Length: 238
Image (cartoon, rainbow, N blue to C red; front, top):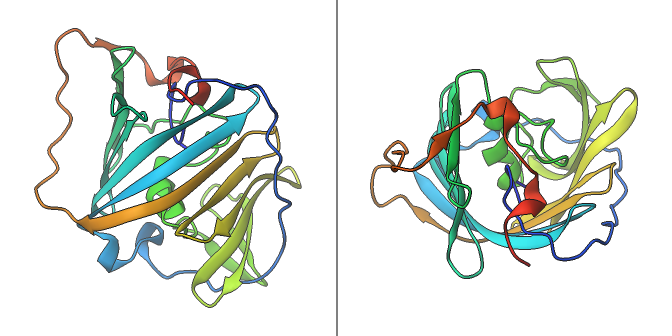
């Protein structure tokens, strides 16, 4: 998403409503891994290309995910001209979100919700696994492809062995979010309201240097995370 993923980052160019693939039931064994990550994921960085389409417009961006540990990661996004859009730094229960165009930032120890309809239901700790085409971590298996998260919400998933081909997040007995794997190390995430986020992992490598915490530059204004403005379609260009 998340674009992807976060607050006020993809610029609207068209206004077409995104078609959404239909969610399907199935069964897949849960990954017995912390937060859906594997040991080989840690200490790496991955480059993704994302495309967003929804009621607010459409757009694209490049996203870099730097995975320091299961509870420490950094996301940085740029537009097609290489200009910085937004950055997210998550360390355990503390998250900092920074918008380089609007020159605003927020920090929270209670979690930052992504202000985009396709992603706002997902906790921050689930984002790396979701980007890497995995099930979110901390799901309790109930059998038959059924899962329950810590908030007692229902999930279903299908796949083959440990490879997840699709998952659905349910709300009030109806599918709210559904993801389907696509070739090339990515997938498409759809929301029942009509927005859709598609991404592909195009490169990956070990981290070559430590990932330092974000340092606020002069001129950036702090706001409350709960009042983060806009959605994905507000600042990047198609």
